[in-house]
Length: 224
Image 1 (tube, rainbow, N blue to C red):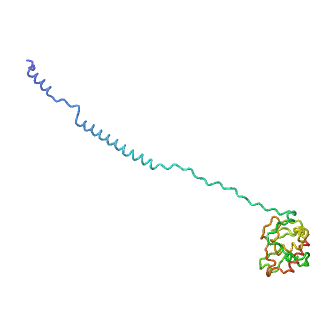
Image 2 (cartoon, helix red, strand yellow):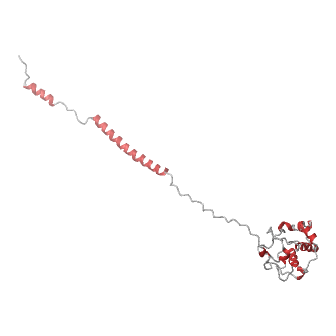
Image 3 (spheres, rainbow, N blue to C red):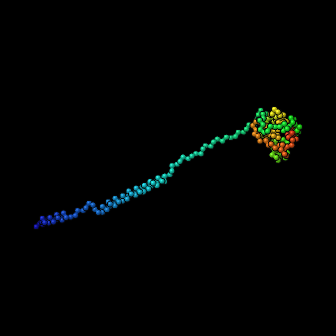
């Protein structure tokens, strides 16, 4: 005898099938995972915004300043190199400038001729007495050349001064001009020479005596 389910059994079976709970698509575990992922995503975005902005600000702050063009010092100006003053020519040495001191008196100019000793004057020219040196005088040959055709040393060359001195001042003889040049060296200046170059101490106390000055004048008149 075969067994067949009755209709009751079929209905019961259907009922039990229809009463079975279908599994939900929104599993709670899945929902939790999705929620966690969303939360982590939001947190990550927030961190990117916060730290990304801070890093950008730090990068802006830490950016080295743009180099400023260095200010170059001004180019050095050309230095003018002093040139040596050429020695006055014979023609220039034969001219005297205007008087730079008080006019020379007749007493100061002295006699037209000299009575000095040229040999004694030659000794004085090379080596003045210690008394004259003590008051600021110096030996004549330190500043004046005497060799024929020589040029300037410190003062003008005295080569041929006996001939040229006579033409320096029309109212003075050669001896008078040389005498004045020793005792009052700033009275007349040769072109190219400044006042005060020659010491004005040779007629002062303990300088040169009048006789010694005449000896120097007599010696200079003999220079070729």
